[in-house]
Amino acid sequence: MDAAILLFTNRGYAATSVREIVEMAGVTKPSLYYHFESKEGIYLAILEELLKIADEGIAASRVKDGTARERLQAFLLGIFRIFETKKAEVRMMNAVFWGPAQGAPPFDFEIFHEKLKAVIAEFVAEGIAAGDLRPSDPQDVTLALMGVLSFNMDLTLAHPELGLGQDGLRRTLDLVFEGLAAPLTAQQEPAR
Image (cartoon, rainbow, N blue to C red; front, side, top):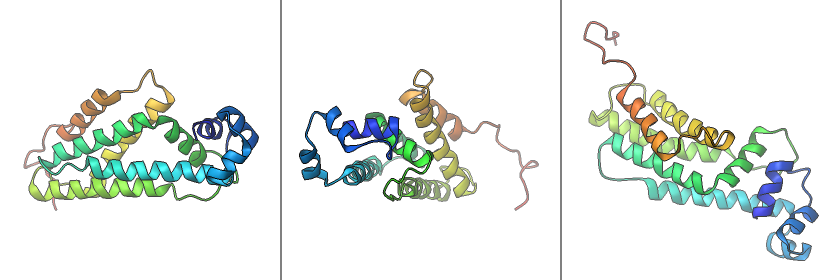
């Protein structure tokens, strides 16, 4: 699987042959066919494994105690820790998702974002309802938090030397949670 991930990332799905995968992996074609049946099978197995890891990570990172801010921060940092252990797979996924159509088997890449978005939105709604987060459009807050996480992941993949890591993500989330502007006074509050 590691060989296929590297080749799919660097060469693309269509340009990668079974022969190249097995040569890089140091196995035979019958071995690949026994375990995965085809190039399509190994590709889908990689993505299904990543989805399983994401599901397990989402479940494990759902902190039950603390304020909404604490729970959100713990959740996002937990997801980032998983990303750090699966950078090669995420890089492959991004290459296939954002790259040109290559005849790769269909896979619902949006499922990753939808699952993440649902958990963050739940925490945000709870936080606004409990008064832990100031009244805002929950969807805007959810997308802002997803944006911070996503940008940190993308920066780590594209420019590792600039990547913020766990501490940088924590600092950036603190900025978002604290708000970059001073609190509005009663006179500045928009009419609702």
